Image (tube, rainbow, N blue to C red; front, side, top):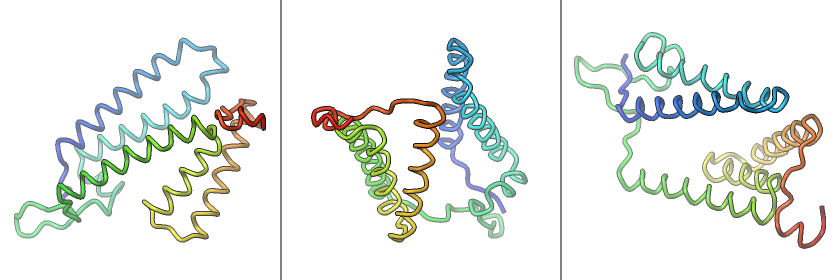
Length: 171
């Protein structure tokens, strides 16, 4: 079994790793109590990106980490991806990603950070993940509660209320 790894996957992983390493280095300019949580997230991200790179270069480890990404060899024939995407499918996926992030940014501006993330997560699970209503609602509510507890209660951070809530003076 081999994985058909494209050069673009390798370049993308290296770019993300470089970007996260730069952010990790820049985070040392902040006070210790302000940088602990972001550095924990960055260390975890760096760990998984390095695992990804190792899995690209070491097929044995890669097979153990991502078994669904490997397809069987057929008598020396180069393995094909599990699902072939047409150029139209790729463009539609990229357009959907750009539109969803654009709508998220507009929702953050209008509704505020917390309501925008809740709506984005729900619609992402429902539309892209094609999850059932109950799964989408339960997962969205649990992640929302976790985000609220983490940022508002534990870190005592004031999340941006959004321009609509400021105009209505609900904050």
